[in-house]
Length: 262
Image (cartoon, rainbow, N blue to C red; front, side):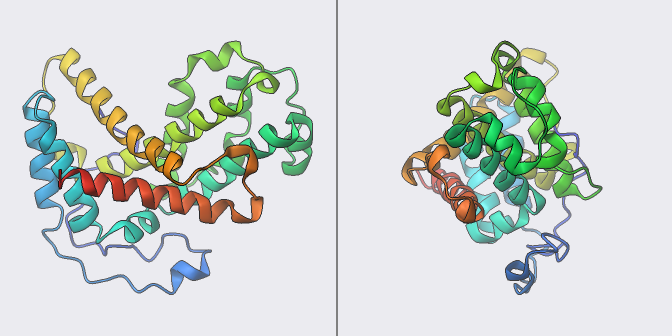
């Protein structure tokens, strides 16, 4: 239950929004990070640990942990989105490509983004081929999260091996996008809370169940966000892609934050 970018957890001294995130985004560079509470990760970390120690039975602690993480650790939904850093741009590129394929076809999409000849290839291979375009490799944590989340999404959909890219449906593109965004949120959360601070059960089945619950919980928030915002992949204007992506992330974080109040 981890991430390739896992570390010992945030110690609370880093700012809510590190200054190196989205270095090329002028709008975000105008935001001055608020002074961080050094203990702001304590409550969500403690509740998440209680959830894990319950073997996944006490979901209230999971809901409480994610809610506190958004509200207390990150300072609200807008900061939560900004903290995703490079993953926001990667998601926007992914949505732009998938929207173009869905709306114009694989041939036109390949020309528009300079992706080469993708016709006749299975979707799994195509997603791997465009990975460097969607998620450029880099050394920062947010870049690592974007890339590993993308790989996890491909691995979670084995049906892509048996589907030609030109035969993928709009719904399949939507599911891929939702899974990717869910993985991004999950990996950011686990990286912030700190994998090494959570002692997982020895029972592999319990670990897998906890992982599945967490996946389903966050995926549900992203999927609900897509529905509430009425997002249709093929109808997204490329000029509005980043705005729409940020709106979905922010709505998903709002849903996660509200779960702790139920």
